[in-house]
Length: 178
Image (cartoon, rainbow, N blue to C red; front, side, top):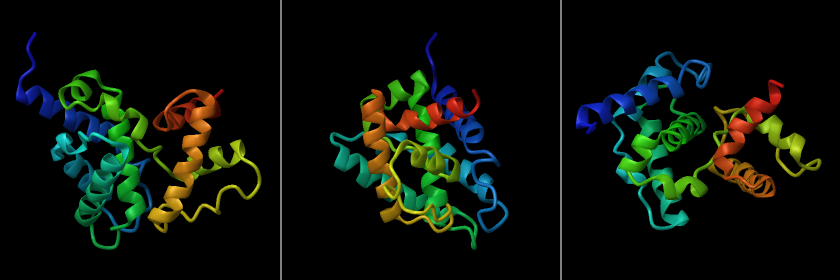
């Protein structure tokens, strides 16, 4: 059956709401963070992430992180919160064949980042040697530079495991629950 514009819009909204819930963005400094992030992501033009290279994709990711950050409530406009929400959302878009195919995002899988938080930081630290990663600053204080350090480590770890780094989050969650 043919999918219409409404189907894709509803599916994107569904993914925005189910992927970025209260547990993903708790204690971020002001009420309304989750709702603001969901609203922004539900309306996001996914075509913005159709890129020809990783450098271009990451540049687009940076721009969209800043756009999302500015839509968050005053007192909660943290780069780390916006980046985590965007990365979780893109991961779930990647896992959805309808939206991934429609927007040509399947090729970006290897460029997508691992959504970072304290849980993921601990999982990455367990996989590394002492002092390979900095102290986790918390999502509110996460900077692009610290994020890049964790993402570089995640890329190496994922390569050793034969997967893209976007999938390390899923693997960390399932391993912790065994």
